[in-house]
Structure formats: C-alpha cells, structure tokens
Image (cartoon, rainbow, N blue to C red; front, side, top):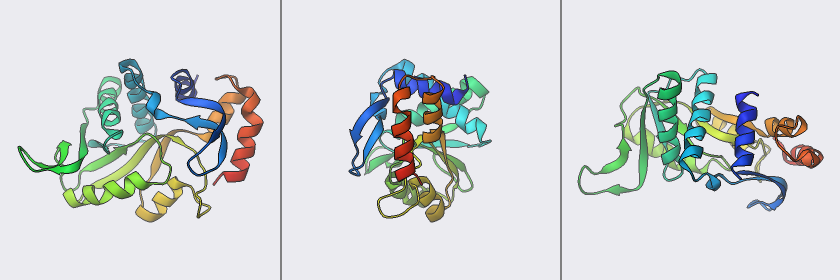
Length: 217
C-alpha cells in the first residue's frame, strides 16, 4: 500500500473522510465530505504528522521552518516538525501566528522561530477551499521578514473549480501569489482508492466521477 493509499484509509478510519450525500457551503451536493475536525487523539495527530513529512520529502522540499496558521495549523505544524525529525532526521523549526498581536511579555505576532530574511518556509494547513487562510497570513509573514515560501502542504486537493472561475483554489493561489500547493492526496487518488477497495464505498465511484466531471478544475 502506498503512503497515499494508507492516508486515505487513515482518513476513513478516523471519520474524516465520509461518503454519502452532503450539501457543501458552496451549495453543491457532493458524494463525499472531509471533516478534519474529527482528528482528535494523540495517535491520530502523530500519524497525520508523518503523512505531512512524507509529502514534504516526496516533493524534495527543504524547509528551515514550518509555519502553521492559527488556529488549525498550529498542531499540524508541530506534528509535522516532530515527524520530520523522527522519520528523516531533519530538525526543522516551527512557528505560528497569533490572531491578535500580544502587547505584553515578549509581545509580537508570532510564537516559535523568529523569521529571518532568506528563510525557507513551508506553510502547513489542513484543506484549502478558497485560499482565504493564505491570503490572510501572507501579509503577516512578508511583513515579518523577506522569507522564501517554498510551498504549502494540505491534506486533500479537491481539484474543484471555484464559484466564480474555472480554476481550483490551488491553481488560483499559484497564479496570484506564486505559491506551490502540494497535497498529500487529491480527489483522483480517493476515487482510485475506492475502485481498488482500499476503503469501503465502491458504490460511490460513479457519483464521485460524475461530481468530478461537473465541478472539476
């Protein structure tokens, strides 16, 4: 089993990936749903960190710092940095932002590694729906130092066009900011996993393909 297949199985077993009929925020009715809020144990977080580390390694990224946007990205960046060290011997820094600037104690917008000019940073997030989180955090990062954003890692690329364009959120972020977004898996991987019996739900393959054909970017 490939690490991508293993990850899809892990998502299903964790109750994060579900199949059925779900009305999304966009109003579209999808045959699958991804709820990363269902990761809630130490074992799950440790395993999730390993998949992020494998994705970083697969794409040859050499980050000096992993950045986790508040709030969901905070535990993800920590888990990924621990996994990078345990799995590949890479001792990578991590940092995350505050929603509000701290005006006492050490103060500041960031916790963890102080960003420096030229630093190679990889952003760690769960999913990307519209790219809103990246748009909010980029000015903060670029205001802190002249960093080099090596890329952004997400768990799943839905490869779904937006409501106003035919581009996916991943494509829009690349075009607008020049940031490469890498996903552990994408929707085609999930469809293939269903077809190959990696996870239960083969009866949803046709609906998945139909949805992909209608809304895919």
